[in-house]
Amino acid sequence: MTFIFGAFSPTPARAANRRAVDAIAQSTDAALVSIVEIDEHFIVGWTGASFEREVLARSASLHLLMDASLYNRRELEASLLSSQHPLAEITDVELVCKLVAQGSSIFPDAMNGDFAGALYDKTSKRFSLFRDHFGVRPLCYLLDGASVYFASKAKPLIATPNANTNFRLNSLAAYLINGAAFEDHSFYEAVRAVRPGTVLERCGASLKQQRYWRPENTRIARGIPDAALLENVQDQLVQAVRSRIPARGVIGAMVSGGLDSSTIAAIACAGNRDRQVHAFSVALPVGYSGPARDERQYIDALARHYPNLSVHYVVNVSRDPLASLVGRTSFQGGPPLEDTGDSDEDLERAAQAEDVDVMLSGLGGDLLLSGYADSYLAESLANGKLGRVFGEFRRRTSSGESTRQTLVQGVIKPFLPWSILRLKRRMMAQDFTRHHALRADFAGKADFESECIESGWEARTYRSVRDEEIAMIRLSTQLGGWFSDDLSCQNSKISYRHPLFDKSLVESCLQTPSHVKVSSGFNRMLIRSTARDFAPKQIADRLDKGEVFLRYNEMLRPHVARMRSELERFRKNEIWKSIVDQEKIEEGLRALDSDARKDVLVVSLKLWRPIALGLLLCPRT
View 1 (cartoon, helix red, strand yellow):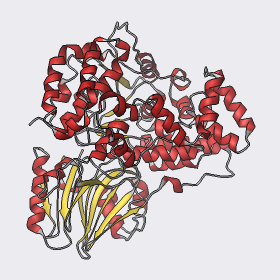
View 2 (spheres, one colour):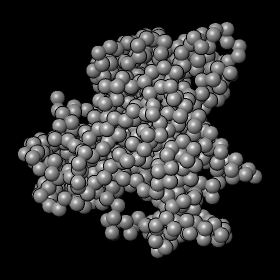
View 3 (tube, one colour):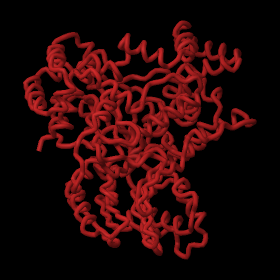
View 4 (cartoon, helix red, strand yellow):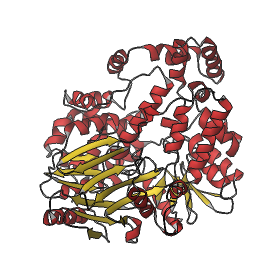
C-alpha cells in the first residue's frame, strides 16, 4: 500500500512546506521515501510506490497525487474517447488526471473504488483533498495558518513544526465507549480527517467542504418486480468482487465461515477456476475440547466445493497476548479495543508467506446487507401491512426465535422513543461496549461519558429499514478513518479490498424495498440469494455464526507482573490518571482468578482498554 503526504500554501512558502514534508517523511520510518517539489506552493511525497507514475500525474497545469485502486476503469476509459494515448498504457492516477483535465463536473463521484488524494491547479492555485465514498483509504490534514499539511495517517502530521500535540479528550471518550472518534476528529486537537464522500478545497485563504455523495439521496425503486431488483443486487455483488481481482498476482480471502466472507471467496473461486485462491481463517487447535467453537466445518465444505481454494488456518492461541500490544511504539488511529490473540498479525504473516497481492474481505456485510427485520416489522405495522408482519413472524419463529423475542425486538422496541431506550440501557448496564464500559469497569471520571455524548453518536432505534441502513453506512464511514491499524493502511504490500463497500452495490441495496431484503430468520436475503448460487448449501442456508473465544484469563495470568509494570508507568500520565480508576484496575487483576466465563469482559473492559489507552498516551520509545 502507498502512504501519501504533502504540503500546500496559497502564498509562496517553499521553506516552511519543505520542513513540514521532511518532518512527516521522517516520522513514517519508511526505508524509501520519494519527495517532489512542484513549486513554491506545493510539495508532495510518498512511500510504498515502486515508481512515480503510480501516485503522481500531471496534465497541463494540473498535478494529482493519489493513492487508489479503481474498480470501474472501463467506464472511466469510455468517457475519455478524445484521448490521444492508448489508455491501457496509462496508470489509474494518470487516467483520473485526464478525466479532471477534461473538466468533469462529477469528479470524484464518477470513480468507483478506494482512493484518497490531493489535486493542485498550478495556474489558479486551487488545491483540494478528496476521499472515496466510504473512507476506505484514510486521509488526514492539519492547518497551520494558511498552509495545509496532509497525510494518509494522523500521527505523522504531529511531527510538523507548530503542530498542537494535545490529545482530544472527547475523541478518547468516544473511542473507548463506541470504538471510534466520530465525525472528522482525530485523537489530536490539531488533526482532522477528510470525511468520506467529501472534497475539501482551499482556494486563496478560504477552506470549504463539499459532500459529493450522500447515501440518503438514493431513491427507492418503484414499479420494478421484486425478482428483478434482487437479480440486480446479485449482479452488482458479483461485479464488485470480480472487479477487485487483478489480472495478475496472488489472490487471498479472509474467510470466517460465515455468509458474507464465504460468498465473496466463492465468487472469486468461481470466476478464476484456473487460478489458486488462498483462504485465511482463525481456528481453534485440533483436539480442543473447551466451550469455544470455530468454523472449520464450513470452511472445509467451501474448499471441497472449489478445488482451487487453498485453506490456511491460523490457530488462535497466543502464549503472550501482551507481547504484540506492549511491543508496539505507535498506533495509527487509536488503541485496539480488545485482544485478538495475535490472530490479525498471524493472518497477515500467513498471507505474506504465500506472497498474496490482493486480499478480499467480507467487511461491511453486517452493516450494509443485513435487512434489519427488527425495524422492518415496526415499519410494516406502521404502514398497515399486517400480512407482511404475520409472514415475518412465521419465518422468524419457525427459525427458532421465540414469539416473545420477536414481539419485543421487532415491534415494541422500534416504537419506543430512543431517549427511553438510552435511559434503560444506562440503568440496566446491558450494553457493555458503550456507556457501561466506561461507567462501571475502569473509568473514574464522572463526566467522561458526557464528553462522549457531545462527540456525536448515540445508539438509536429506527422505524425504517432504510433509515437504519443509512445510519449504519454513516457509522461505518465514521469508523473507517480512526478505528485501529485498519486493514487498508500501509502496513504491507498486500492490498486489502472490501467488495461490500462498493458504491454501485450499496446504491442498489438502498434502492431495494425493505420487503425484498427481509426474508428468513437471520435477515440476510440479499447476500443469501447470491450465496445459494455460489456457496455450498451448508453455508448458504445457515442461520447461526460461531466465534472463536479462548480463555483469555488463563493466557493473561502468567503476565500479571508485566501488566502491573506497564500500569505503574501509565500513572505518570495526567490524562490516563484522570480517566482510569485504580481500584477498578485492581479489581480487574483480581478477576483473573475468577470464573472463566467472564474472560472477554475482564480482558476487553477492565484491563485491556486502559492498557491500550496507556500505550497510546505513553508509547515506548
